[in-house]
Structure formats: C-alpha cells, structure tokens
Length: 257
Image (tube, rainbow, N blue to C red; front, side):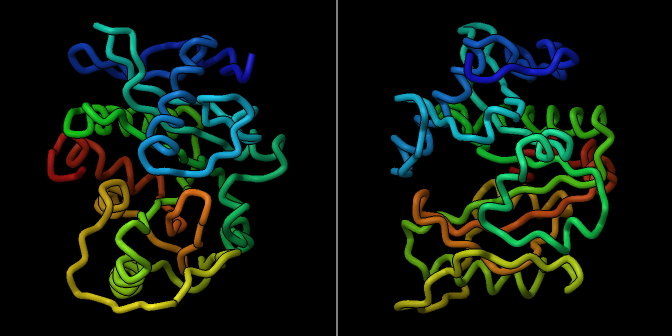
C-alpha cells in the first residue's frame, strides 16, 4: 500500500453537493485514483517531468506522510479533484514540508504556528467549470478546523508556457498588491530567469492563485523556478481565521474561482 489515512480520517464525508462528495481518501483504490489524477493533469496535460515511484501515478516522498483530500462523483465512483495535505506533525515525521524544497522558510517557522500545507491541487478537465474546486476548498477548511491549525501554507503555480514575461508581470502585480510584510519573507532556492523578459500590464491570474488572493492570502516573496513542472511557484500564507471569515461569503460564489 502506498499511503494510508489516519484512523480519524476514515472516509467520513466532510461536505457534499448533489452527487459530489469531499472526504479524505482512505482506501488504497481512492488514494491511487488521486495519484492517477495528479499524473494525468501534471504529466500528461502540463508536461511535468515527474519523479514518480510508480508508473502512471504522481507519487513522491511526501505522499508517504500526507493525506489526500478528494472530491468524488458518486455517480461514477470517480475522483474528479484532489489536493495533498501535510500538517506540522506529519511534516516533522517527514523531516520537512514540500515547500522547503523550493523556499527557505525560517521566517515562517519563527511564527511558532500550527501549519497545514496544501499542494498538488488539481481538477479533472471536464469538471473545471463545476463545483468541484469550491467543494475541495470546503474540505480544506473543515480539515483546518479539525486540526486546529493557525495558517495554511503552500505553493501556487504560475505556468510558464506563456513565457517568463508572463510570470514576471504577475510577480510585479503581486509585489504591488499582495506581498506580506518583510518579517514573513521567504527566499526561493531557484530564482526565476530574467532572459528576454518584456513585462506587460495585461495580467490574467491563474485560477488557483486568484482564489487564494480573494480568500485573503499573502505572497511571501519572489517566485521559485520549478523546471520539472515548468512553472513559477509563489509561497502562500493564509490565516485560518481569515479563511473562516471569508468562507461562507465567498466559496459558493462563482466569482471566487
């Protein structure tokens, strides 16, 4: 078995909407469905060079410690959305958060806070205009409350198929509008290249990043260049209290995502 949920997570539905149900994956088949969906989206659609331990699955070292949150369509018994959750406790067992492979987080750790890392979020192509992502967020909020965390952290990706200029233009906008204070600064381990950059004022934010910002997230520094995924990752910090205040007002709104 690749990875299992904790005993307290045993597939209790966290929320549902019509035929869609969000819960922690607990069976091996559900976990495999999450990892297969990640491979489908990141490798097959986006061309990411994954260091997977099993063919057709996006599975790395951190999956041995993380929980897989999933949205299933009960009509087909199929996972249509998923994200990976790594808490402070499980990150301690793993030796690090995934985000630490991309950023120096010493200022974040100085908060001495309970953290929940959200990563590898993806939605099956035919459901990207549906309620799947909103329902996934409801599950994240519920887990954050159950775990009593202080902050959500993670990496939000800016695709580079539109060139480095696109990413640098977004970073300029983020620095002007959404950067955290200097005491919360993180430092990328791989800087975003500057070759041939021609910034533009025509900035269209990636969907997930836009959702984070509308929920009150802060960007904690410059982007990290991830050449395996061909993306620029920015480090997200989101207070749970801020998320809870905005949750009921925003997450049912089609304008959020």
